[in-house]
Image (tube, rainbow, N blue to C red; front, side, top):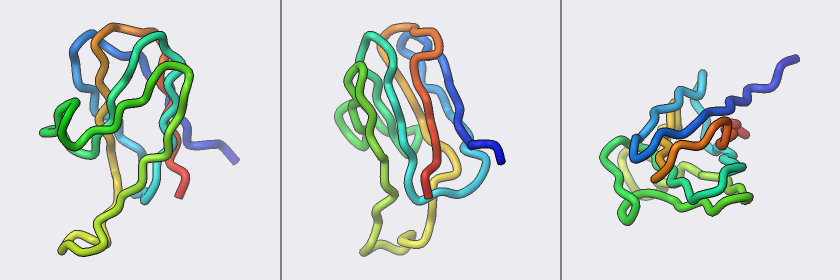
Length: 97
């Protein structure tokens, strides 16, 4: 069995789309870099609206939570990661359910 884990590098001020490989209701995002990263479920999000900030040397589970909307049964098939600086192999992404 192989784990579905991706390690990516960030690009300065660029939003990167990361395809998860299958639908997932929760994604573990780890920041091994030296600067904050932001994670969102859609391309239109900004740092202050629709994104989660993950400080350096921390991790967070991002959960798809839309219980009272028409898209309550949808899942992540991709997420967006962005940072202010370029960092090599700084982010690890793993769908967890």
